[in-house]
Length: 296
Figure 1 (spheres, rainbow, N blue to C red):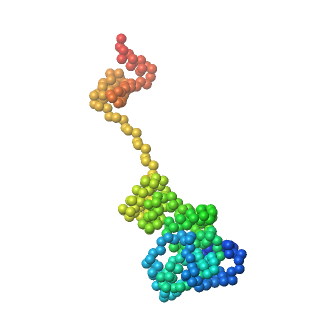
Figure 2 (figure 1 turned 180 degrees about the vertical axis):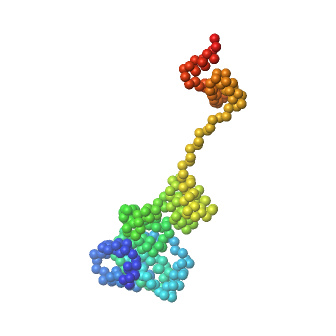
Figure 3 (figure 1 turned 180 degrees about the horizontal axis):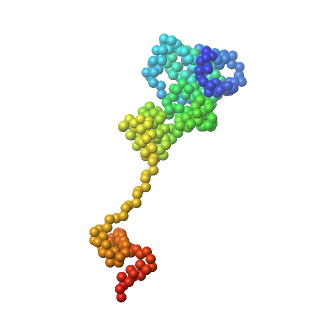
């Protein structure tokens, strides 16, 4: 059974080292060493109030029950003693449920000593390492560790065997609208879809993209491209080109230019307003223009 203990993962072993509880100072001769396995009557076993998993598929439980009937329980559950002939489940609720379906009256178990805080930590680590939780359940479990066990987010990754960015991505799921959280929980969209939606701050826009995902069955890559296009800043409008002068003004401009022997521009504004601009390139040209406009 030593090998089974190691299979639980380094994170769980670290949590169990030096654990203490209200029973730690008492003599408990009925409690075997933590690395040994005892048969615990199922009618003496209470469920774990900190169980982070909320959904158990009936079909999967039935299949596991058949396997237990044929081969027994290979991997013991983990419990803590809470009183005379009373135990509380730390991890392994799925196996316990299936064992009851299979008609078993007892189940093999490791017996630990743990207070509520340590129990919550062990439950979450155990479940996460076995990949029993959907992404939203993992996120909620991480949040409980932070809020109830006062664990800093930067330390959480080390406890559950995940890097800090992964922990952060899970927790950020809880900032999404409820409709998106439910879609993740029910497996309608994946963690990848949800991560793409997190980058958007507008809740209405997030829900619109969710609707497109459902209607068009978009892949994660397609959603990422869609979100990028929606977040891309709009290109500034190009300034309007020069307004084409009506023919009567074009003729007038040519006539004035020929008469003054100089370059002339006419611009039109709103409501018929406009201006005439006459160019000159020297003082001499300026005086010539004046003399042509005022011959006397």
